Length: 169
Ligand code: SME
Image 1 (cartoon, helix red, strand yellow):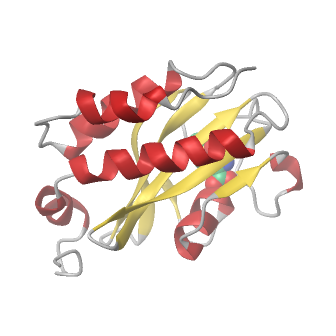
Image 2 (image 1 turned 135 degrees about the horizontal axis):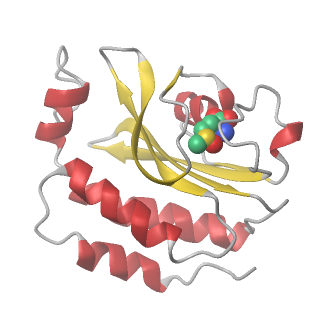
């Protein structure tokens, strides 16, 4: 297993230049990430929807996955609710872990913020135990920070936050 090359931060920024559709941007961000790290079985996004009051499955690479996760549930919902990155070396020891893919043994989840609001999370799974180092976590947090300025808040608001202006600065 190798450490994630920090070059991915510049790559995602360049890749998404002038892209205005957030789903398009997240789809290619997931593909870039999935193909830049060894030993992954899933990489993608869950986006909070005001309509369903859940984190809805977004663009991803990997096996079919759970489509709606409630805030506070699983690693994804916990990271979202606490607005905190979670590095889980052994998912079987995380109380409430949601096993979408039985092959997963370790996981990293990183909240995504747009205009100061947590709009969802980046979720990455590995079949290896303790796949993600502290260094990987830091690079993935920087990756998330480079990615979010490319997500158009106006479009996100229309689809995911139809009843509120909470995403306006
Ligand atoms: N394992 C996650 C669920 C999402 S899948 O890994 C794609 C969790 O416990 O929240």
